[in-house]
Length: 312
Image 1 (cartoon, rainbow, N blue to C red):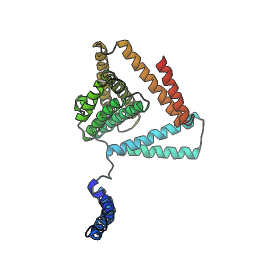
Image 2: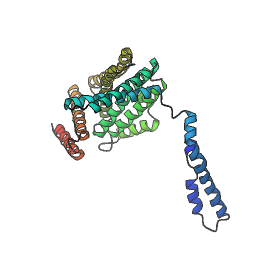
Image 3: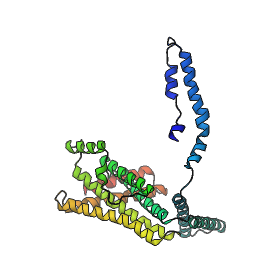
Image 4: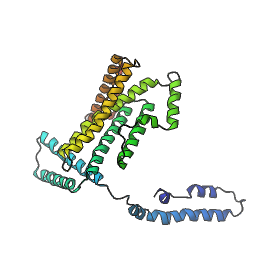
């Protein structure tokens, strides 16, 4: 699809038009190049939809259908709960919400997920929660760029493996970084501050981020208990994967402290500081989303909190 969908000849046409008149057969070159560009527009562009359908790229997987219906159901339940909190009652709106809820539940039941599909739905959802957590930590300034790159490379590998059904739970992914990423890490470790990075500090930050992300993923998977067509044993099995990663991160944090790389008191203080920053940023973002405060006010408040925590 990438080969067929790419329009070719645009740069070549620009170069052909830039040819001086003294070049032999310049008109022929321009005409031939223009013909190539025109043919890709008329042939490739008009048949790309048929190619996508023939390759099956427009067919939604059972797991995606289930997640879409689950998202609708949870959104409807949240809307009804909010209306109840506000003591707002409207018979017409309530009827529409009930109808939408019934349709979403029917879609969930009809999804007919296999055991493998259930595992994929739960595992992928947890992995995407982890990825979102890393992104939020990075946006809040709690992850240095070198740690963000490593964690994103790691989680994207895990997502790809989960989609193929080959997720390696205990893989030592840090050893599988590309050579240029490993070289970049070594160079940053050799450079003095502020150009370089303390690799022990980076290791601590990465492990802490993994622990936080795994804990959040395991917690969020509990929402699937309220959904039909998902077995409780599958939920427990998926949660165990992320609980295992959380315990692995805990052990690594203890190793950092035990080996004297970072004092235990400093370790827990940094972890508490990171959790405080994350919680504050998430609350401020929620206030922005609900329209309570503006993004500028939230940014200023977040910066002030960071300063106060650092001073403390």
